[in-house]
Image (tube, rainbow, N blue to C red; front, side, top):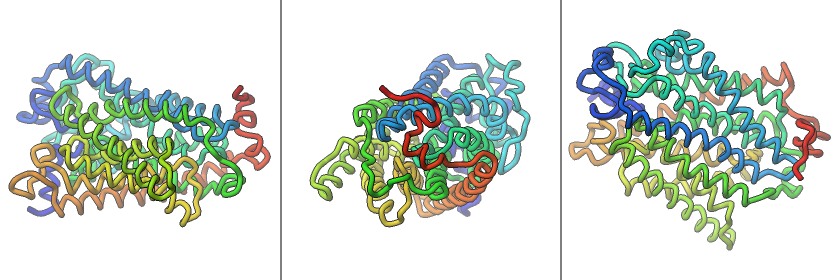
Length: 455
């Protein structure tokens, strides 16, 4: 089968939320508007999606806020938590005004239109199922669009919040606000459209991204790398003591991330069914084995297993399983987790040292690199009955064709995000300036930017 034709066959599974059985949120036997007309809101699926939405929101506040705050120095703890909290508010409004429309409006292959600007049309259909896309490619849901857009909003919230880990301790608050708004509109929303809307070109290509390996993690990781390079290293980097303020806070944050990730991955099934159960199982397995892989690698190299290594390894595993969660079986999940743990350890230690960039909290080392690992290994291990891959007769694994498709999607997102992020940062620098002064950085952002002090 030619790659393009095969991509069409894969389109029904490219977006985890739309890869459901007829008894769940997707009426596959009667696609398009006709299916939407016949479908009714399923209260069980809706309840699961409401729960998942709350879990994913918890990943940012308080999860990521505590995780990142615990890893910076005391003088920047409040400013770091403020970034996650402020981005939650900023992304919510941006998503309502235009982000959702650009991501999930009809549009074309590259970006949605403005048909859903200010959530137009939501009020008329607040208690009805909805259809994403149109024509033969449309997918019909049995959850209300309000629930779908809220679930997707939590992804739009956490993605720019992840980037803050790369430029911790040195970006102006005003620059962070402007950059976040522009980045959501110019980068996040179009990429979400590419990957998750039936009209999107990556969706049509047949790339598999169940819950955000490309849209969230590679996207945020690459943007973080560019931000770290453009802003430059922290004052004192390499010789000042930059030990974490409180690993206890970081452990609490990582634990909340782990629990919330079940909403992130299992919620992306869009229904309370077998796919959600498999996604939850493989998510747990990948996180656990990745934590162990990082710890044992660190133990072998440095002589002691660290708390920071354990929680970083778990996050690395969670990142890598995200694109694969609804498409792979338990044993491949273990393999993905091991590779992610070792890759994350290498990216957060050796790679950063060799290249000389200051990715403060390893946004690229963990999210970027492990997102790439997960996206590529999805193509290797995608299980036919779950992913609609057809290359192998027994349906037990992915294929070279699928791996090539995955690599193409990864490369496209990497390049677009890198170039567009660099341009946006330069614009922000001209408008408000990117970086605090050296004096403010030495004083700490808590006092310099917010006039407050921890304890």
